[in-house]
Image (tube, rainbow, N blue to C red; front, side, top):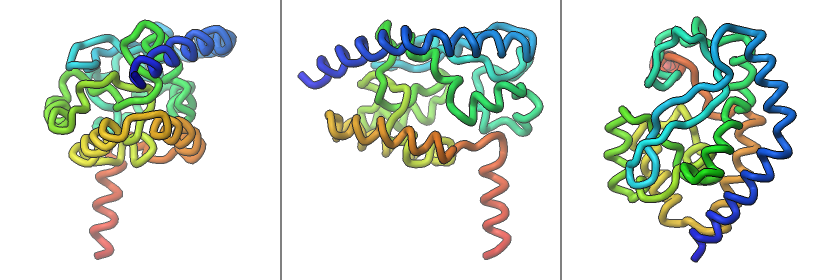
Length: 206
């Protein structure tokens, strides 16, 4: 019953969001076009509920010659690909706003495990253990407010499993408001080999 109510809430809130945020969409689209050559939106194949593939929408934050189908934090030097406007969009998570459309048409939910890239086979397999592939992926979720890019895959999958086990109104509210705190603090955002450098630096002090 809760999942049905959750879906109804997703439809209502995403429809409302598309209307209210449409002026921001227009402004960002113009700024992106002025900043660099290429489309306004970026589409990428992701894994949805029951491991069905869909295309996630984002505002484009990188140059059109950037490597595709690879998490940005795994690139050796992502700074060379990220545009000036893109840097701001990523820091504020505004690049994720177009996913409101994914939510509206049923590919995603507002709250749920972040959809894996189609080729993140290790993460997909780990999520199978926790049943995290059997719920709609989300714009934000439990793992997002507990580490985001800095999390090892096994920890991320385990947190996704914790969300599935505890799924309900209180859990979703906790994730929803926790996201605002994470965005303001830019918690867990790692670009390129930053996390590897941190680990190396930490090891040098042991």
